[in-house]
Length: 298
Image 1 (cartoon, one colour):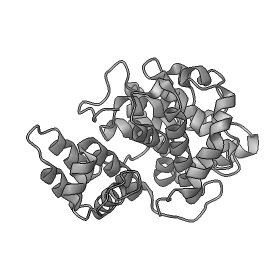
Image 2 (image 1 turned 120 degrees about the horizontal axis):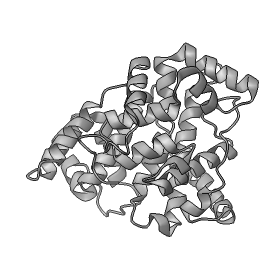
Image 3 (image 1 turned 90 degrees about the vertical axis):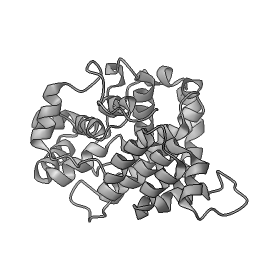
């Protein structure tokens, strides 16, 4: 994925105006975090230096901490510990710094821990999101279909695929909890009940947030289409990958909601992802191992 689109998605690819208006009129969406807005502005400046980017990063403790943690991880294998944000930005590069900032900002905005309420468990939700991100990264890294895509972009797409659920929980809790109860009682997929009761789904909410936050077009579309990848005419392999990663999370015992049936599978995604079912099963233990070793946002 490349940098954020300042004008949002192209008209043909964007969620319809009706969905945008419906979501915006029904659910209050969080504004783009200040650190992301400033990073977009600085990185868009061709004269920007690592020091300029570091100045923005250093003002957000969560982002600065994550940037330093990532650059000092075993992945980069540096011989000397990096304590300077400016040097860390130089090592990571502007694009990777922005990806790290996005993850930190998401957890800052949505990661506040709350107690489980009926069919929604915040900790379970984030376990599902992280598992899906790791699954997307692992599956994508094993397929030639994503050879040109950075692994971190696949992780972020998986991490954010269900963010619409936590927005609904925070901004329209009574109605959303009623939807979850209905889905659990009737043993029907949440997306079907959401469409009936809201007129849109959590996938629509998440995609509208991605547009509002100027996130990459393919991420916004994959978020909206991850339950129906065949409806994605622009980035179907990515939507299919997130669909498959989401299915794996449910299958592995990390659902995003409690007591509701998992979303129906689309059997055509394997061809789009470039991995057959047997290869996916072979990769599942590695995904589970990486998930067990991961750090949750709290």
